[in-house]
Length: 161
Image 1 (cartoon, rainbow, N blue to C red):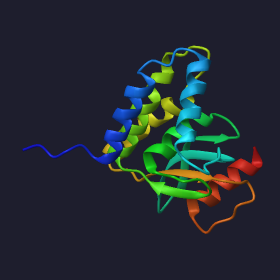
Image 2 (tube, rainbow, N blue to C red):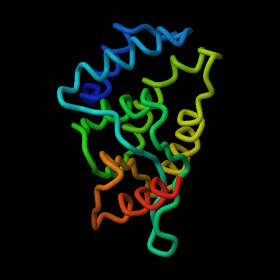
Image 3 (cartoon, rainbow, N blue to C red):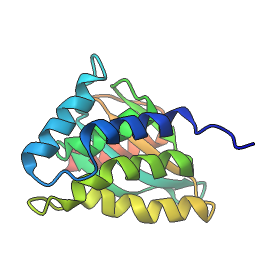
Image 4 (cartoon, one colour):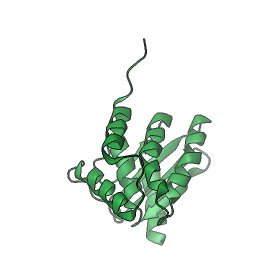
């Protein structure tokens, strides 16, 4: 007997069935972004967000940070993680990052945009498989302070941008 797929996989399956698997135009990407945001009442595009690794010796190293840009990947990651908005960090598991990548991949066919988040997330998935500790970090507002080391590092990066 095979175990049923995890809830986030079912959610991604349903979203891809609704939005399709090829978002070829900026308008299509905008519709998907707004559709995802509409499913998260009260959610706002974060002031900054990023994905990176953490370890005891080096602290946080971000593979990609976004300050006031690229709202679709923020909505995708929030959807998969169940992030309701504001400032927070989440330790990622390979299956959650894989589903976030899967949900963002249809945007890659739109050649009007670069896709730096997707390009950063794929190697991070391999790092997770290889045993790294990977986090997604959201900063709801640039003024938000936190004892969370990921949030503190993202805030430092965001306020220097």
